[in-house]
Length: 483
Ligand code: DUC
Ligand code: ZN
Ligand code: ZN
Ligand code: ZN
Image 1: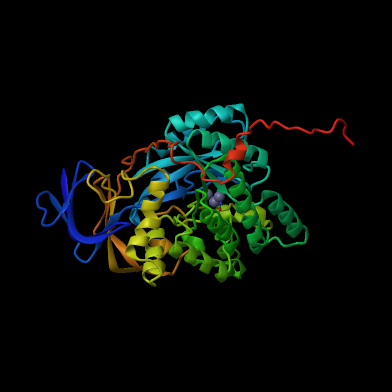
Image 2: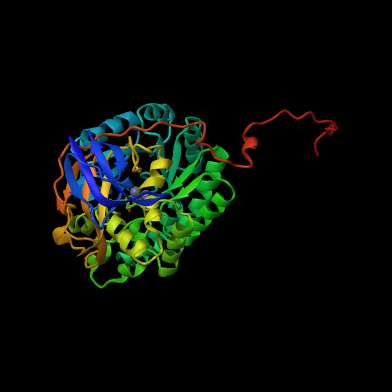
């Protein structure tokens, strides 16, 4: 089957140019002028871009006594409707569970996906079985490993475990990832706030100040450096964490930072809303920050010190959020965003002149495709690449509303926001999933995309790396007795 996208402007991370795009059997087979034959999709006035890749989702994830509400079907339908053509979800092994057992559980759920997907593996506990499991995971195409420095007593790993795991991942050519918040401090502050009667959703924000994130980010960077592993910091929400990442990158370390569209566009005032439900629906970790932190995140995207915009899509219904009435620590942490990331970032990034369309493609698709070794299968408009494409109409507008969304939850944290720049067409491996604005996904169309490790290039560039290889010292003049 042949499809031709006609009369659009191809926009990649590098270039913008007028061209038609021919698609055959799910792949791009020709890019050029005046292409003919097959089904034609009119892209007049539109940008033809690599489909968005959201590298941070939690679909149907067991968490805080419940499951996140979007599964692989509704989650990937939401993704496609908003121009995201691939998600990377986190496999979350239970305590004592083998990594490949957990991966199988995820494979059992993901068969319903409407678009392609890949996995990161979470290292939620440490032992011989995990050490072995990391190698099995790499062989199975899951080459990135997330570590939680928070969620004490549940998912959190300590520094000794972090260092062991980072070394193992580095030795196998994988990528280390961290949720960087100091879990010990969060636990102390949570207990103190609750004891003092601060039980509302705003207590969640007070229990996780920016210092908690800045400290953990610095610690993770230093531990990764000593372990010789590249590091990807998820959901960077504040200047304290961004500053550590900036400094590491300037020193030649392989460290990347990922802000979320939520932190870029929503701020901490949401937690002081008089309606409990409104505030609780926005409880996520890390929490939304003040406007200065927001400005820091935008500056990072503009200057290149932050590399990727994701969502951490982890949606819970209002009913689930209400588990935390009377105790903010029981509000399931997470917000949605999969279907809104592209239009929100286009509106607030390109629409305001902060980002060029090419920079937009870089931070929504191409950069993460390169970091995760998916490029140029994904994240590219090139002959031979998968035809995961968005035809974005920069003039098309809508007001975001839960009443028209694909996600399974009953609200939207961006409710009422006007966005300009929406998909006219979205293609997943050549199949039209959004057709002139109408969502037409196909359950089960999505396939797992395995990834290769790359030991040759995927190492940290620490100036101290040689300290990890002790050399014998011939020492003279050793005192005969100690003091
Ligand atoms: N943060 C959230 O808000 N939800 C899921 C996990 C996480 O780290
Ligand atoms: Zn996290
Ligand atoms: Zn997450
Ligand atoms: Zn998260």
